[in-house]
Length: 131
Image 1 (cartoon, one colour):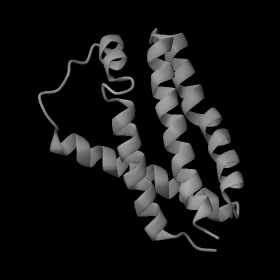
Image 2 (cartoon, helix red, strand yellow; image 1 turned 45 degrees about the horizontal axis):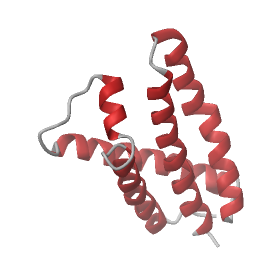
Image 3 (cartoon, helix red, strand yellow; image 1 turned 90 degrees about the vertical axis):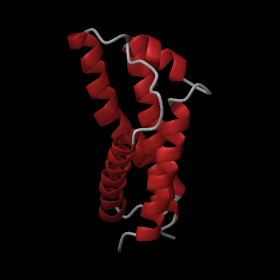
């Protein structure tokens, strides 16, 4: 079984768009700025956008490797894989930051929600496109 690279590109773009909306004023942007102490930017930073696309590409590629290696061939299997990966990695990392670095749990929850949506979206796109 091989990875579908067209699906990989679609997943990267979809994750970038969804994450951008997640941290926008439409959803959690205001709370994120208040809790993190990061000020609103004057405009888009090309290097940060490029960096985020690369991060999403790496995430999608790694998830795609799991989809192939575990022979996930439908959206249900992909959804299950995504949930387990989310619990095993972002949730544990973010809960550690709450416990050991005094990160507000609300801020960690905002990040965890972004990771959940992003991982599930990528996993489902890659898993469902394998059929």
